[in-house]
Length: 403
Image (tube, rainbow, N blue to C red):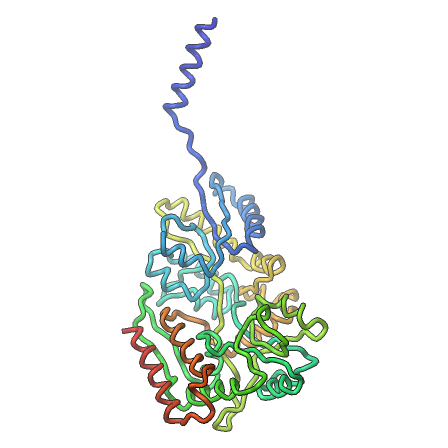
């Protein structure tokens, strides 16, 4: 009997070695740390609603949208299958082969259901590469309503902060924030890319009367004793008003308490006597799928991306982690329209342009332009001729990045 048992066990062992057991194929998802738990819950709902995609193991890892692109470009194969990234990284990702164009049937839904800015941000050349997830990456005015009497006028905001001995924060040495002045006066700075994400042309009119008015306004603002260069409530002191984004809404509410208020960016009177609305960039979070060798896995990833970017899930994500939706129906919900920060941002976004693709060198160049004001190299006494020379050099350098 013992001998028969030994023979039987040997046979079972041989059989187990001859037929390997395959683990479920994995789909790796990258989202910001704050959205990990929410995403895991939504994936469970996706699995329940899509039994055709059973058999996949879903791994959600905390990789923020600011880091996702760099990680993917470093090693596409080891990167996530589905990931969230900031829209200004899309050209780099396309060039690196880390993105696949959206399936036509999903593209139709995306275009119909999301705001135009988000759809534009997800497009390179004439190809839609990503699923819009948010329209909440922009900036507007947070202010203490016991200090600021009229948030619609930049001159009044500054005067009120000066009178109260408070600080007004605006990050003028940032290529993201300083466009508020240039775009506000009608100056342009955009780049064209081909379908592979390569920069093909720079469209810039900074070296113009419009650019001169914008630069002079930045210089005038810096000259105020209330001005402080910055855009983070957590790093500010004695704040009366600050240009910042939705990510700091909780900190703003805690700082200002009952005097917490938000508004679109104010207007200003330029050196030419005309009134201009501060503008700037609108930014978006996008969700994408990387190319897959297995068509079945690609179908599962596409379906998951479509589910996670749907209007219903966007609204649930807003309620869970505060991300402002790009889906038009979700944007119109009472929950979103009653949020002061998102309402101010929505008001501001109508005056902005979607942030497209910009070479990495642009950002350091823009910092240098702002630093020339902060250091006192450019002052209210600097001649128009010298200011125009500065803008011409800036424009020529921007153009060189696309050649």
